[in-house]
Length: 291
Image (cartoon, rainbow, N blue to C red; front, side, top):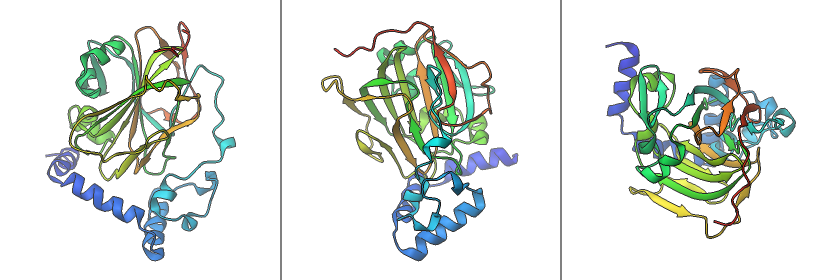
């Protein structure tokens, strides 16, 4: 068994949720010596660049989660004039076309679009033949997720699941990891048609939050859907925050067939910064405000 295979096997026998929830309790602890020790070791291990933070004193944060989801200086993440901007700091895991109802996870590994979206075939039909981009947020990165394109929220789906790590090694070793992990699917109407932003949980991710609902995960053992069509009033502008991770993981963006083109310079392992040019719209459509 190789080192990578051993790493993947270890995750399968680890009590993922128990470990993650325990870490989550520590991350919320406000006892000075606990949170300062946790934060100091984290900054040192991952070489976190605190000069980018609005508050650059890591030990002044209320707890580890406040530090981890720290705001970044806006002038350091200008929002590109391009139609579509990158939702998060990190690196491209994969991006490209959604072919035959599957998405590329890593070389030799694909997973089902329908499974990713919680098993709803009518929902996945909107993205068949479309485009996907997967952005991996490493521990040192800025962990807020922003809108790639202005959109009106239509639906949110919480899908329970595993909590495998989602780094490069795991993506290459564990089949369908993004469609197996706990995740929150956020659906929007945009001028490019339907857009999905999927926040994927991972090992020691204690929770996922959205700006309109607060903490979404951990929720319960069943798929839960929130329909926002009746409200018809939650619109988030390109570049505005839409969610965050405690601790971090992966954001997947989906568009429909022939809707957009990704920036030609982007490929697997390309580094990303929130707000950078990410793609262009093929045929702009009026935002649907009446559904």
